[in-house]
Image (cartoon, rainbow, N blue to C red):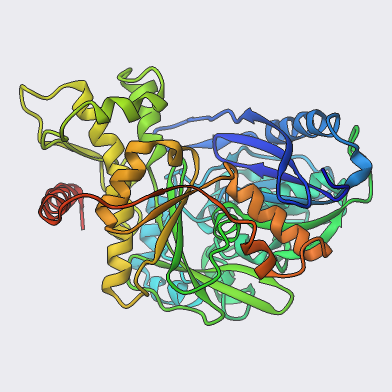
Length: 494
């Protein structure tokens, strides 16, 4: 182990991890904890920001007790992206539970804005579509529905941010209020051409500029730590990245035709595009991938609302699974899916359909259908949705997929990864590093601090754990995709 260590906070939707990485890109130690979910109303999802911060503190204590804290050169933060946090600038206390990216409470508000004709200007400036998935309507809801939030805004004492900004504020004892371009680009308030908050967008969503953080490049010294238990003071916080962009960076996808899929609660399919802002097809998003100094990289993304959450639903909601990991063997025990398809539109459908009001659908049931068929259909739905995104992008002029790099918890599912390769008719590569978003953030922090010299040096560190090669015959693939398409069309409302 070298003496140059990087500490990364990976704050996700269902859990938080803290890792220490050395200068050879090896994980030295790590600790993790679950994040409690709150569902106050149907379709609503919330987190407790103070509880998340308390959990981070415990994890920091756990990992710094395993290494020499004086060897920690820098800190990086990667985070669930669109989740909205509001806090009091004077006290530093959260004033409402965080509204999670999955939350659908602003469906009507988003539809109203679309009906008022704002969709085109929002898409042209942000690369996104008006949808509850993103932060802007969540901030608007907080201002409209919580008197404390509005009162603080009136006194210029309100802070709005995504989870990176909240953790930066806490790590620096309130000295730094900032975000990076990859997170700002997910708010519907940020112009991805000018790389700044946009006055017209702020007016549409009625969000005061004074409540928003300063936007910095992804690789940047945002501030320095306050002393926190065994974590020393004055360590530079040298990178902040949205988790999906961090995964793209962690896979070293730095060229045309390179893409990754992060299989988490939802799934983000992201394709590197380069220094020119892309114009993606309808149903796909343009976003800022990262910025290092004046150099900005863009990406095209397809965000899928529900993938891993489908397996959680089978386990916790229906009781069909004791352990989501068992789905691998259960699915493989069947010769096929028996004609059963599950469209998991539990939070509407994301890319490439963007139907906020779509509802889930289970189709193809017969008396011969077993719970194993439903489990397999749920697992297959993840790969089918990813395939929809990739095929849609390629049909509209995006570069042909060279390889798909896979990460996230479900990338360990051998059945799913093989099925994905078969549907795409392309290699699927899983990473030898389990926490790719955290590693990408460590890479960015290390570049900022000079631990690694350039992108080429990072690419030499990338080693696939396994390569899945396609083996399905063309006719079977065509039939599966046709039957899946028919099921999706039945649940669309548009």
